[in-house]
Amino acid sequence: YSSRPGAPISDDTNIALRIVGANGNVGNEITVNTVTAGLQIDPKIASNGQNLFMSWWDQTTQDVRGQILTLSGAKIGNEFSIPSTTVGDAGRPRVEAFASGNYIVVWEAINADGADASNGSARGRLINSSGVAIGNEFVLNSQTSGFQGAPDVTVMPDDSFFASWFEGSSGYFRWFNSDGTPKASSEISTTFPGSQTDLIRFDDGRIAAFGIASNLHWLIIDARNGNYDGDDRANQLVS
Image (cartoon, rainbow, N blue to C red):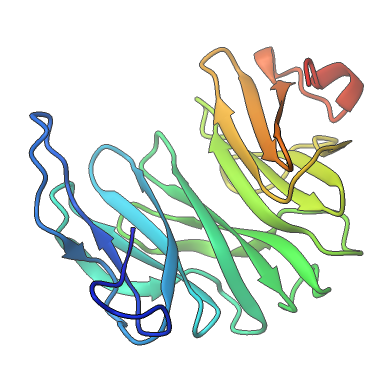
């Protein structure tokens, strides 16, 4: 969580963590970020079972940061920047763990370089269990006109992953291999309210996507038996 003890909203904000034991006992607050100047907000956390990975938005420098920790909250290595490009702004991260122990981080990039250098794009990068990047960042969206942002991600049992993002009034969904390459013909779009989707994977291969406008909206994406083919009429089951 973001911690600003006894300070006004304009002052520095840190990313904090407290470990809650199985017995309900709550540990002391741990400051996760090393760079303490500015606003550190919007933290996300995932675990591969051996360690923890936290990612957050450094709103002051417009960067997405990361830190690997032990399961007890001790830092492993140093805080690091997630994007591979220093061009443009990055924020609103989401993170998930693979069964292999690696992690996937997705975020919203503005005026970054690469395959989509337009106003807004959805980006991702693979991080190994030690906090070392696996290759460079990659663009999630295939459409490069307009503003694509507010991505989310969920990992499938075989370590492939689904990513979502928004462009205008449409929600986009795309299936990727574990190395970050998109599966063929796997991107679909559908009219979906709100400006952020939350993805939850079911064990049977279906994915629930939630969006909030004036009300909570949801739909189910079907990827059972690997039959997802980018046809929203075949794969969007219920909305």
